[in-house]
Length: 137
Image (cartoon, rainbow, N blue to C red; front, side, top):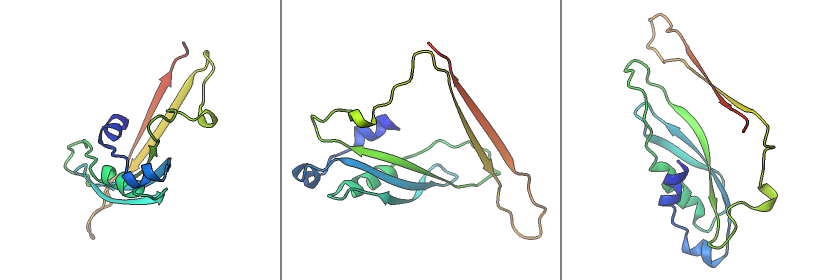
């Protein structure tokens, strides 16, 4: 996703002239086909950057499992950073480093419940848990 955003991002002329940098947060909803159906700015910086971030998010296309039975939507938030040419890639105040011998684990859990028409038994909910271990170097 980062590579796609970097490739597609066109820094607005108005933002360059005003020397505007910052982060635009976008909340978007993806349907069961993998298409972004809704997107909105949560926090923006103006000067055309909000519109550019929305344009990029609306062009996202996701691969979804072809189960055929579950037609669910999900909502996510993405942060798109606008930095003027020549600015450092990571600002010193936000730079984070991990100690060399640290192990890190990320857990992510998704629960889906398919919607059903009335007068049908309730379907079972599915729950998935993904664990990613990052071994120490």
